Amino acid sequence: MNIGYLLPMHDMRTVQALGLGLLIAGVLMTVLGVLGGDIVMGLALFFIPYLQSSTWLGASAIALIFAGIAVLMLDRVRSLGSRAAPMEEGASKSIDGQPKGEFGGVVLVGPVPIIFGTGNRAALWALIAMAVVVMAMMLILLFLFY
Image 1 (cartoon, helix red, strand yellow):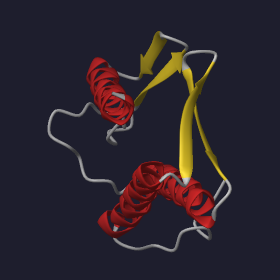
Image 2 (spheres, helix red, strand yellow):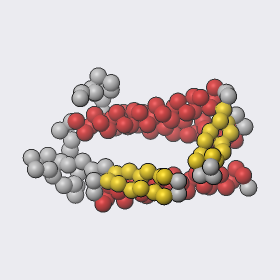
Image 3 (cartoon, one colour):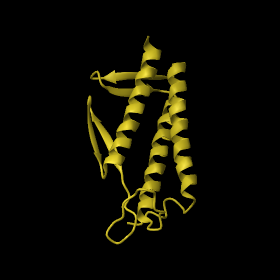
Image 4 (cartoon, helix red, strand yellow):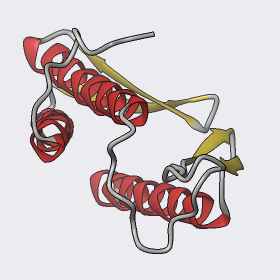
C-alpha cells in the first residue's frame, strides 16, 4: 500500500517536527484549558482519564493532539516503506542486507502495562516513555487537586 500521496516527500525531520509541534500545541492548549476551567478532567471507573469541554478550546486541543499523532504515524509508515534509510549504529540487518527497523510500545489495560517490541532496546524505550508520561500526568493531577 502506497501512502506517499498523503504526505508529500519532505525532509523527515520537518515532518517529525510538524507532528511533534501539533502534539505539543494540543497538550499545552489542554493544560491551559484545565487551568482556566474551560476543560474538566476526571477519572471514569477510578483509572480511565477523560476530558470534558463545551468550548472551542477543548475541541481544538483534542483535534491538535490527534492531528499530531496522525502525522507522526503516517511519517513512520512512509519511512518504513523507504529502503534508503540510513543505517543506525548498532542496528541489525535483515537477510537482504538492508537495515531492520525496530519498534516498541506499551498498552495500559487499567493498571497493568503490556509491553511489546521487535527488540529489547525498542521495548525498553517504549517503557521509559510510558513511565515519563504517567509521571507527568500524576504530577499535573497532584498539583491541580491538592
